[in-house]
Image: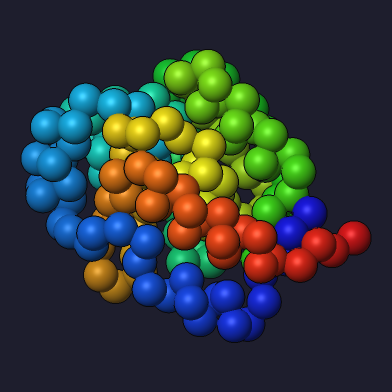
Length: 168
């Protein structure tokens, strides 16, 4: 398990990709054509409501440390079959979460329900995704972050992950 340090938490306040509104994200996605991975309840629900079908959805029934509303919960739980459940405490990346994301990327499909917090799953998704994939996650108070995965994006994610200390 890897743990987020205060220094890395501060670094991650800067988005890993382009910040945009929901409509702009939908428009950009229509021109990409690769694997689409959405991280977070609000971001994933917004994409689904716009008719975008993410290949991989990672969520935890929470938004800004509060439970999501019943409509969001129903939409995510009902989306694309059963979810794989993994535990992941806030501020950490467990081996179970990392493996679940890597396996979903290898399959090209999946839904992962995190018991705990899914925020850092975006780092794992960026590291695991192939060139041309899109990883989307919410940036509180700003909008949706869209990361177009390439070697540069993967390198940034790997550098942050590599600086996360191991914890028991």
